[in-house]
Image 1 (cartoon, rainbow, N blue to C red):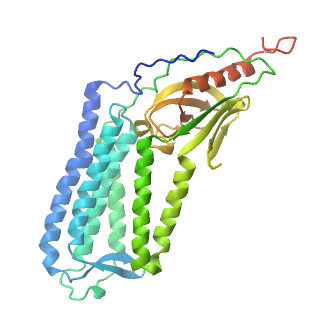
Image 2: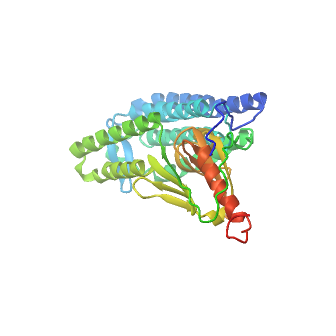
Image 3: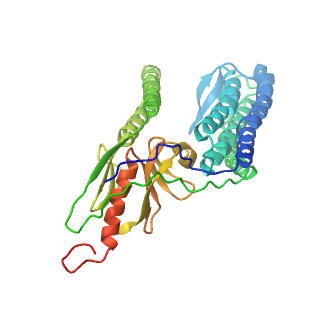
Length: 354
C-alpha cells in the first residue's frame, strides 16, 4: 500500500476570478447593503413612533395574544440587530468561510440574510403600528395577520435574493493524489478504520452555544417557571445533536463503507454492491454544503462534513452521492476501490481474482 498523498493545495472550484468577484459583490449587496438601507428606514420610523407607544409595550405575542411586555425601545433594537447585524454577520461569515469555493450554498445564505432583514422589518413595524396611540398595552390587538405577511415577505425576499445573484457553477471537487492498494483477492480481508471529528474551532463554537443556552435556561427557571420546558427542550435537542454529530467512526471493508456516530446514531451504510465509484477529494463544507455536520448539498450530494480537508466521495446506485470528511481519505478510498475492483473482476478457475 502506498500512503503518499499530494500536499499541494487543491481547489474545489475553478471559477474565473472575474465571475467570482461579481458573485461576491452581489452577495454583499443582497446580504449587507440592502439590509442596511432597509433597517435604517425601519429604525427611523420606529424611533418617530416610539413616543406614541404605551410603556411597557407588548414585545411578544403568543397563541392566546399578548404575553410579553417590555420597553418600547425593544423594537428599535430589533430593527438594528435582526434587521441588519444578523444578516450582515451571516453574509460576511459566508464570504470568509467560502472564499473561492463559491456555489449554491453561498448564494442561498446571502438570500436568506435578505429574507431575515425583511421579516424583521415587517415584525418591527407591525408591532409598533399596532400600539400607536394605545394607552394600555393589554388592549393591543393580536399580531397574527401581520406575522403571516412577515413570513410571506421572508419567503419572497429569499426568492428575489436568489434570482438577482449570478448562477455560478463550481467545477467538480478536485481529486487528491490517488493512493494505490494492491488487488484484494477473494477470501482476503482488509479493513480501514478512521475517526472523523469536528475541528477545534467548531467544538469551541458549539460549546459556547451550549453555555449560552444553559444561561438562558437558568434565567427562565428563575423568572418564568411556567415556560421552563422551552429552553430545557432546546438544551436537550442541542446536546443530543452535538453528541450525535461531533465525531463519526468510518469503516471501509468487504461489506462497503460504514459511517456511524460515536453514540451509535445516526449511521449510514453503503454496501459494496451499491458503490458505483469512489475517490478522495478536497472538501470545503461551508462552500459546498453551507456549513458543517450532516448536510444535504444543493448539488444533490449528502455530506457528513465536520471539517475542511480530505474526504471520501462515493457515488451510490440510486442514491445521492455521499461525501465524508476524514483524515487519510485517500487510503480509505483506495481500499474501497480495491474491493470494488475485486468484486467486478472475473474469478479464475482456482477461486481467485483473475
